Amino acid sequence: MGIDKFLINEEQPVINIVMSGVGGQGVLVASDILTMAALNAGLDTKKSEVHGMAQRGGSVVSQIRIGEKIYSPLIAKGTADILIAFEKLEAVRYLEMLKPGGVVVVNDQQITPLTVYFANIPYPEDVEAICRRRAGEFIAIEGIQIAEDLGNTRVLNSIMLGALSSFLNIKKDDWTKAIEQRVPPKTIPLNIKAFEAGAKISEKVT
Image 1 (cartoon, rainbow, N blue to C red):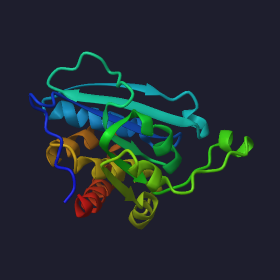
Image 2: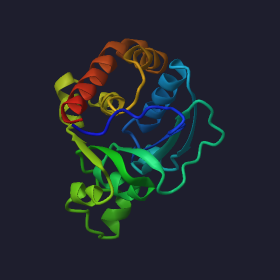
Image 3: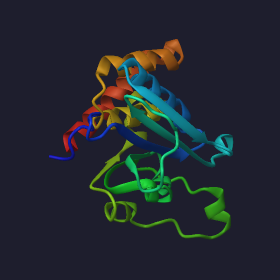
């Protein structure tokens, strides 16, 4: 058994989530869907984004805060409850944002950034070991393989959201509605199927 779902109550009035990846992986769409799902559940939410090189494979990060009442979208270093990374190096890059004992969900994919390639910086060899030094729960998702099995790698973000959903007390109907609100109509069925696949994988290890 892993960590229970994060419940918003007097003991934990806010849930802090950091979502990271590289341009083209759908991180920003995923953060939109997450905030919409929270709003559909009757919660307050705010998010901030950094995506200066989003169109060129650069690092993309979104901070999302969910609770009864949120006043600021910014998450202080070392206070994120969950880090969800669409690429392994991005998990390491933003690991310092995670609180000790927090949750890391990572897509088991390596995309070497140009900054690392040209600077001849070695790619971290054991991302899981690095993350486990800080995380209380670590889940690696074969996101690309699952997306390929579904027939479209562009649904990686919905797979990752499905994995994330196992840790949040947000009903599936609220997630489904958010997906319907955000993705192109013709891709709704596939994105919902991808979300369900991610949730199924995550639930097996939580």
